[in-house]
Image (cartoon, rainbow, N blue to C red; front, side):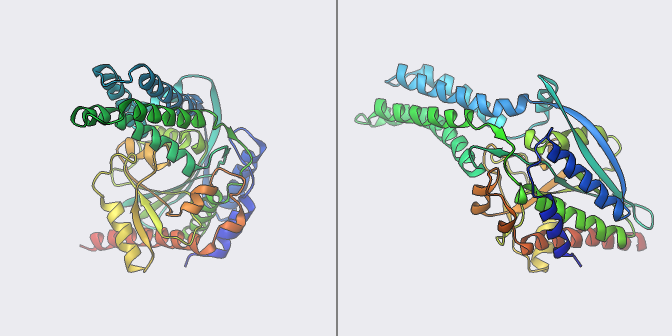
Length: 389
């Protein structure tokens, strides 16, 4: 069974600032390598480069959107077709950037390059591999001036105010006493303040990153230890510890770009990120908050298995502006999900100095670890049944 105490100890050992390019990142990589090798897992380290441009766009684009909305509100105090056209274009761009798409990969090739590492461990089955499971967790951390929940609210307010600029002319057309000028100026001011807050939201290296994502790495290290000791018969398990997730999911993108040609079609990806709360497990899939495709075999299997094990697990959409490592993998056509925690309190602590060990509960880590372990065993059982037939 899953060893929650071992996972919690790993989390404690990794709960220190470890932003990309810092000694903390190197220390985290070394800890992961030593732990995997001590467990007998075959390890590969892959270096990659990425651009800072995607991270910069997350700050500058919302600010420019806020300036545009405020400018339209000030220069067009009466209903006009010009702001309708401009806001429609702006809103289309916001919707396109809010969901990670494959065409966004070119952004990682532009601008000043940085380097990071992916650590990959392979656990082959005792027999012939018939199915493949990739378990993912990012090891880097960062702090920001705004917690994730506040940042999501700012992104949401930009979308709401843009929608308002489209709707208010229609309201003014049918409601002659509607205070159009005052309303659009209030919306413009709110959009500008939201964009300004996001512009000032610079990344730093002060967060211990206990929940995000030392808890996920600790859980994955424990899973690797268990699966190495008791190997599955027909499921090849790979554990991937990605770097630079906090810089636009660069590690996951580089991994899938490098390995997609050699992956089997039936490969499934489970990403572990932001766990450790006593709240229910959140199962996130799809490419963003505005699009949620039909649940596939992986999602349905996890939710069904959670019900069987009496584990609280519910579908979840990501707030706007938040990225997880399953997104670039999903964008390249693979079935991928993220297991996280449905906790507002945790969202308010992530990316701050308060993301500390004392706020992470072993029970929350145990739930996710047990779900992943049982899913891997379920895959193996199904493979054995299909082989017997």
